[in-house]
Image 1 (cartoon, rainbow, N blue to C red):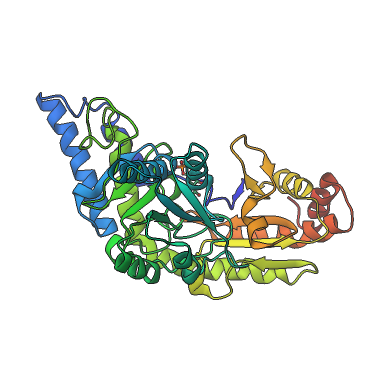
Image 2 (cartoon, rainbow, N blue to C red; image 1 turned 60 degrees about the vertical axis):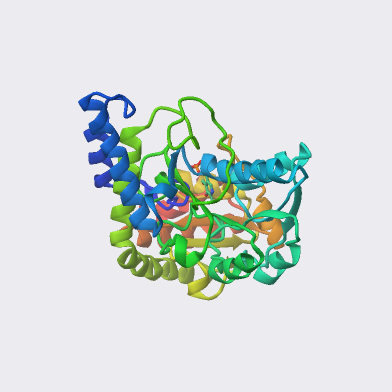
Length: 394
Ligand code: PLP
């Protein structure tokens, strides 16, 4: 049995999501006028309402997308291009160096095309972003600020209410990538004061390939896809009835369980971090204060270990964690986030979630406290895995 510590990459689907998927898998086209089409459309609208209730916004502000990447792209390109049309100039975009590529890449792509002037704010060493530094970057021509709610690698949580209050006073809209936040933070569009929000269902127990863009009423957004005009012309394409229903079911279940889950996860992540940082050369990165970091994430930096050897050793003993950030091709590469924070060492992200059990955490403690010192002593991955066999039997 795999010990699964990679919920930040994807979390297993919740039973509520599975039920909604199979209920609507054979849905009719939700734009068709016959009865079956109307039933499918009702399911989409019910899903939209459930998502709006979960996020504290209006159903009219919810657009279903293919995931977090599309939701981020829609907000960033859509708002920048709308500002460009409005002003006939080159608008200014402010974001941060710790954003996911789903934000940074479209931002840089727009800048390379000359569609936007881009400012990228550096993070603090703990991965958080200083509100004052973001505000310093904002100018009279700033069309959008994009700051993530929580960082996918370090789990660092940003102070969005403080930022949005200042930006509102200056009339600058705020987009946030809330993809990592939704499983454990109380995502609330109004309380956070954000104008646009991106979520991804597979991070909170929904299926992969569906997400949500919240676009506040009045926020001008140029659509990325043109076609049948579905979703109020913002996102054309046949409604993905089963995926949308499953996304909503998962989010509703995640919100109902969130507080209890947070408490459970805090206990486990502290137990895991405490045990592993007791080893020589292992430190926990990210914010120190519990309220500044996601309850689900433990990010460790391990000295004297090759990241590839660490990843291989964990695979050999059936522990799925993220040794280095997963890149698009499935390989690992140096992390721009850690680089931006000035952090060095072999990174290991353990991310826990709604299926995590006590015994998984204990197994992870056993594995890491055995394998890491052996690797640090220069052993090859197979020998490190063998050492675990000798200690506990794997
Ligand atoms: N934003 C963040 C912070 C993420 O962690 C991810 C996925 O890992 C994404 C965006 C992209 O989401 P999706 O996989 O749904 O496209």
